[in-house]
Structure formats: C-alpha cells, structure tokens
Length: 224
Image (cartoon, rainbow, N blue to C red; front, side, top):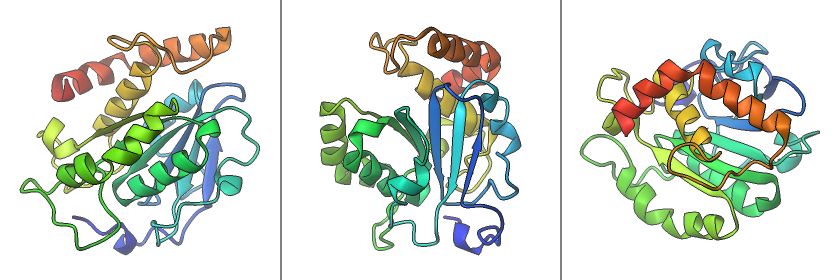
C-alpha cells in the first residue's frame, strides 16, 4: 500500500478548501493524501462543486486523530455527507459517531486501518477488516440515521491500474462516490432520501445525476 505521508504534498496548501454554492448539499472530504494543495479542489471534483458545496480537509499526518468538528464544519449549517479514503476511514466513522446531528452519510474509499499490524487481504485491500472490525460502529450509525457505504477499488474496478488506496481525485473513484451519494437521495433502490425535500436540494442532486451520467454508467458496470 502506498504511504501518502511520503508523497511530499502534505506540507503544501491549506488544511481545508471550500468550493461550491452556498445552500447546496454539503460534502466534506477527509483526505489523507493531501490532494487539495493549491487552495482549490482536484480537477475531477470541480464540476461536482458547481452543484454541491464541497469542503476538502487535508488530514494531519496522524490520521487516527479525527479533526475537530469546529475546524471542519466551521460555518456549515447543513448536515454533511462525509467522504473519506484509506486510513481516514476510522476518523470519518468516529466523527460521524460523535456528531450524528451534523452528519447525513459516510462514504469510504479503500478503507484501511490506522493500526499497521492488521493484515491485508490477498488482493491488498482491507475489506475483511472493514466488514468485521467496523461493523458495530456502522450499525450504530445506521440506527441513528447516518447512511454508511464503502467500496474497494481493486475489487470493484480491476481496470484501475493504481496501487491502492486509489487517490480520491481518480476519475473512476469520483464516479463511484457520486453513485453512492445519489443512492442516498432515493436513486435506484433506496426509496428514502437523506436530504430534506427542499427545491434547491432536489435541483442540485438532479444536476449532479445529469452531469455525471457517463461516470455513473462506468461505476455501475464496475461496481454494480
């Protein structure tokens, strides 16, 4: 597994970058790779920020410490959708558990434990760890109305030729994240929307579905 701490990007850029219209659904990204390093979102996320209000939080090196809610939710009045990758998975679950009143859902890409002693699966992922060790916390969150979903890029999309964890800025990852966020809004099999029935929210998710149609098609073919 790649070590994001050795990529040389963590020291650059602000801790949190916000982009997108006020009043739109809020997506907060917890990124252990530090991709939003020039006061803007990764290029693959910028079209999404035309319709959603996105905060990109570059986690500190010790990702086991969840950033304080005051830092990452400063000035945000809406409940947020958390998106996290790799070792930020535990921080996202912990943040959601401590602040369920401010979190609508959690989407995790290539979840991995902070503890280095946990063995990886044969395919290099930590799917077994996620399915077993986080099951109780995920069940508690669901019982409190917070949706939780995760996907492993190596298993769901073998065409992604990047050593896991795949960066959050990878276009196929963006497609899968959008697919899951839309599923929380009543898309396809999920009849219970997470967002309140406000006209501007409905329009925003409709625009996302329309704008990201091709990416969603690829995500469905690769991940079901």
